[in-house]
Length: 225
Image (cartoon, rainbow, N blue to C red; front, side, top):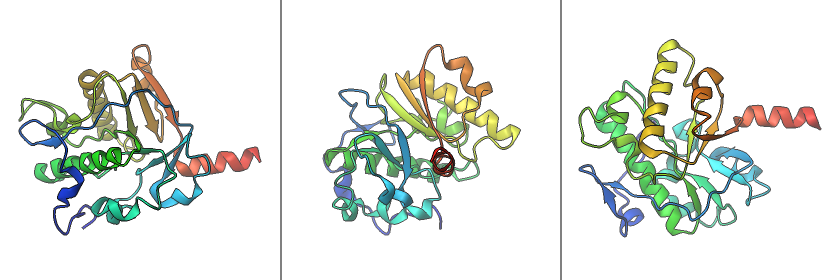
């Protein structure tokens, strides 16, 4: 039940959207300029945002923390009216999920992101992949995990709990390389751990912006104080 967001299809989120590919993933608009956030604040800690022009609202936490928001984001627009920078929801894509569920969560993330753009938010697409079927063209003639994300722009990824095992590291790097090749982003925001063994080889081509996870950020801030 951790990944069951909808009681019904919230069609109003994408009623004016354009779609990409056979699966009709909603297409996000590319921002007119690149904005580099200084802090990433999880949705469950959103009241901690004090500088909405520089701090970014993210969803790198358990799906249960933002399930209601993803189901009916319209209910939260007034609460989030001062927040300007926000990623698309990081709906879980576990590698042992059925493919239909992985793709459904990709579609949900893009749908909410499209709606937030229509509400005037600066939306940074979150790129999340599951098993290799989501980040390769093995089944479809395009890559589902990156469908609807603008190319040559800015994306965000989360690395929390993604590099514990050798297998995790393999899929993190394989998906990262596929994402960089497909989207050729100008900037990649990395929330969580930043393993130089994985990222350093790409730094000559891509600008990475590393933002610590919330627990680390709060701990470091207390040390400074």
